[in-house]
Length: 295
Image 1 (cartoon, one colour):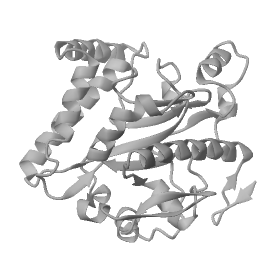
Image 2 (cartoon, one colour; image 1 turned 180 degrees about the vertical axis):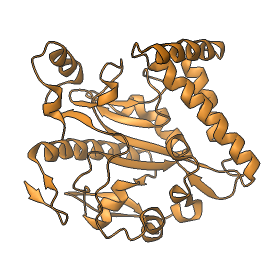
Image 3 (cartoon, rainbow, N blue to C red; image 1 turned 120 degrees about the vertical axis):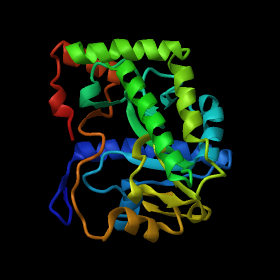
């Protein structure tokens, strides 16, 4: 195990997950380079690249971001470019609501605790967030936020059905709303149309509207996302905006001072050598204990 400045022990299991995610990053970079697409490290991954020259020791995934124009181009080539075991997962091609894409490795396991029984690809993942522009007018901004929250919440309830009484009612009501709008793919298309409606005519500020709408620390200026450079990340490199210091200071304050905080996605069951479908079956048959696969 390796100790960090705040005495966090990095296990062999965590390092194995990191190795898998770095392999996935290389595949992602290959596709972006081939199609001249811009991406950059986002959130904790940007912080890790600068402060640790790699993963934050208590992190378990890679977060990337793209301006919407590059993200949309990536979606058009993804099915052709990402071959098995890789799977470019979106709300259009799998049974889930995320609001952003994830690159999955299908012969592994990366299952969030609360999603153990969900019916979609749950291999180890990299998050890819599209960045959209906010409207300059506060009233329009609030309207956009409300509409995104409503559609996103409805789609979450549509896919979530744990059997609990109130969640079952939410699931039924959501199903009615979704199918009145032509099904989940068409309803999500409305969501994306709302998210991108102020691109090139807003206030010059972008954010990951699918997850961070309204959080001022997550705003970035489009003008700061025009020039990038590769910086060390573990044994490879990752693209960073030249203005990373300003972005990290806005997001994290004194970002060079380590502070252990939980992941936004919560705990995840990880296995680099058991496919997620096999993992779920083994847990159901009590052949393995899921908790043994938490990092």
